[in-house]
Image 1 (cartoon, helix red, strand yellow):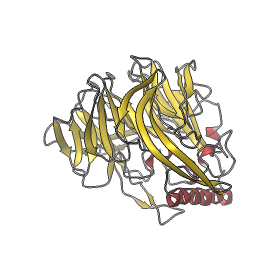
Image 2 (spheres, one colour):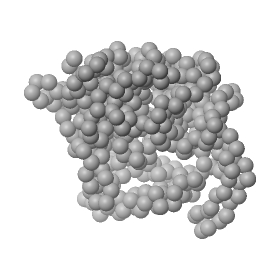
Image 3 (tube, helix red, strand yellow):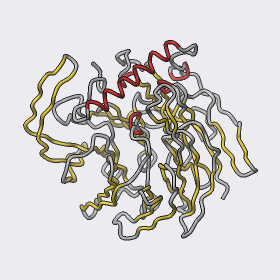
Image 4 (cartoon, one colour):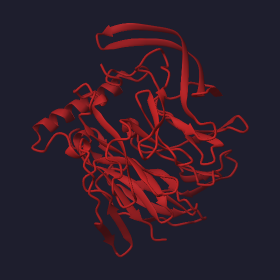
Length: 414
C-alpha cells in the first residue's frame, strides 16, 4: 500500500472511510462518463495555451483565465511578482496504487509568467507546493514526508525526508517551510512513547501511544518547543522578515516569535469553510508584507492583528460563509472569498463550496467591500496577490477526481 492509502493513524475511522467511499463512487462515475477519465493536460509536457479572454460586468469587474489547458490549482506568485508557481493536478499519478487512494492524485509543480505562459517543460517536483522562500530563490515542495527545494529553472538545492512521528510511514508531516536566514527546512514534529499496534484487518490496525513532546524541528535540529501535540494538518507560515512563525492548525492561530522565543495565541480562526480544504494541500498566507500584522477570519469577521495580539481590529463581517483573507502588498486592501454551498453532484448529502465570489475591503475603518469577480459556480481553495493591482486564484469545478481546475487572474481597480 502507498502512503496515505490506508486509514490514517490518529484520524476518526468514520471520516476517513467516508472519504474513501466518496472517491470510490467518483472513480466509478468517471468510468461510466462519456468524458475521458483523466485530463490529458495533467500528463502532457506541451506548453499550456495562455488566453487573453476577459469578463466585464458594468465596466468594473475584470477577470481573465490564465490558461485554457492547464488543469491546475494553488497559484503562488514569487515575492517580486515576476513568476507564478502552481500545481498541475488530476487523477492517475505515476507511482500510485491505481485505485482510489490519494496516492493517485496528480501533484506536479510548474511555473508560469503573469500572462499564463508555462515556463517549465517538465515538472519541477512531483509534490504539493508549499510556497517560495522569502528571498524568492526556491520553491518549497513536499508530499508524503519527502521535501525538496528547487529553483524555477529546475535546479535541486535541498531534498530530504521528515522523520516519522511513530516510527510509521503513515504518520508523518506533509507540510514543510523554509527559513532563509538559517538555510533550513522546518516542520512540526510530535514524539510519542509507549507505542503499541494491534492488527485489526490486513489493511487496518489500532494504534495506542502516549504523547511525549512536540517541537518545531529543522534540518539543523530542534529550535522551538510546543506544549501539546500538533494537529495532523497543521502548517507553519513564516512572516516575510522570518521573525515570526504562524502556526495554523485545526482551529487556533498561534504565533511564535523567534527573537523572544515565545508563543501568542490569537484565537480560533476560519481558513476556509470546507472542513476538507486541506485534502489536496492548497495554501494560505495571512502575513502583511512588512510583517507587522496578519489578517484572518473569525466568527466576528475579517480581523487584522499584530503578531503579539495587542493591536487588533475587526475590518468587516461578511455575514456569509467566507475564507482565505489575504492582504495586498501595499497593506491597503484585504481580498477574501465568499461561498454559497450546494449539494455535491454525486453525493447530495455532502456540500460543494461553490458560488464563490472574491471581494475587496479596505483596511481603513468602516470600509465597504466590493466584488472584484463575478460569482462562479466553482469553488476556490487558493487566493494570492500578484501585485497591488492584481490577484491570482483557482477555480475547481464540482467534477469527480479533480478533472476541472483552472487558474485565474483579476485586475483590482482601486
